[in-house]
Structure formats: structure tokens, C-alpha cells
Length: 135
Picture (tube, rainbow, N blue to C red):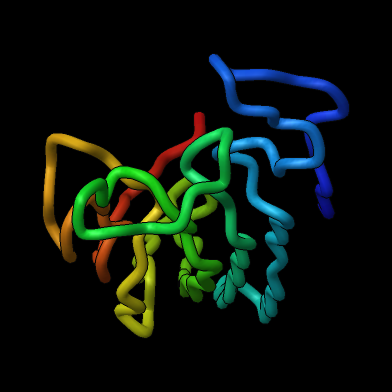
């Protein structure tokens, strides 16, 4: 999805927001995947891409004085999953989220600091395992 959301006519205190990009609205969000299934085995790759966004209505550039405002950079994440069905009703699945362990942040904040001043990090690489049954 592509988004070019801007204020048509707006004010915040004395600031004129007309023409500014809406805060916390990424320019694009794309999620896609490819799956290959052979008999009881399935392998899937998922790709997510999120465009950049502004953290405040004034589209303020980040500064040392106020790291909670500024641009949130675009990022991409690749996930992987593999599953196997057995005994008609059971399946086992293992997956890796953020396969490449991409370092990114999803928003800015005033209170918590992780990757740098005023940013909240996205999820790092994680591995999961599930066992399922259908009756």
C-alpha cells in the first residue's frame, strides 16, 4: 500500500501544518511471501518493507536537544518458516523472524532509549517452534 497523506489545512498552536506529512504514517507498507510445498513439507519466505515516516506533525528534523522527534527511516525484514505434516492430523513448524537480524527502529520516544537517543528498536532475530494437531 502506498500512502501520501498530508494535512490539507491544519494548525498546531501557532504552527501551520498545511502540506506536512501526517505523523506515524509510513509512506508504504508491503508484505509478500513465497511458499513451496512438496508432499508434507512446506517452506515459506516472507518479505516486509515499511517506508519512512515522521514522528511529529511538524515534520521536525531530529536534534540532540529533542531526540523524540525526527524521521523514522524505512526498513525491510525477511522471515523464514518451514513446516512438516505427519500422521494425518499433526504438524511441526519452525521459523526465524528477521532472518538477517536487520537493525531498525519503528518509532521515536522521549522516555526509552535503546539504539540511540529517542528510538525504539524493531524486533531482532527470533526463532520459534510449534507443534500442532487438528481433530
